Amino acid sequence: MTELSNVRSSTLPDDGRHVEESIACVREALTGLRYGNVSLTVHEGRVVQIDVTEKRRLKPN
Image 1 (cartoon, rainbow, N blue to C red):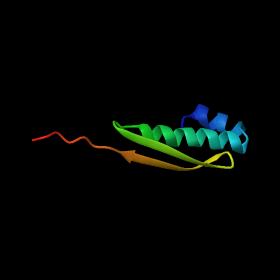
Image 2: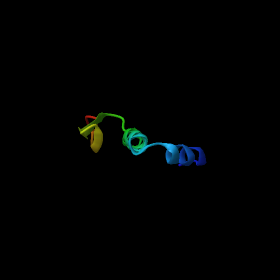
Image 3: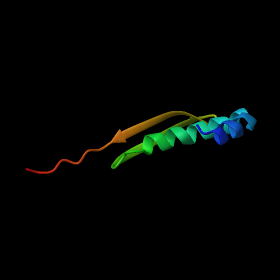
Image 4: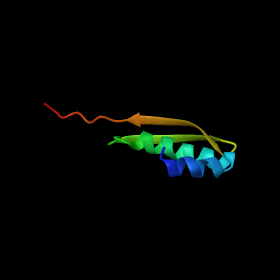
């Protein structure tokens, strides 16, 4: 995290921090993903699980 992010996160309520952390995790899951799915599981308004399914396309011989 950058300094600005640390300052901003420290002033956010817990829900705001959770949203920022969730967005960072989703961004990380998407990094480098060319084909596939990212699925979020939400319980009581909070992201509790992120599933990443990557598909690899094989070239025919």
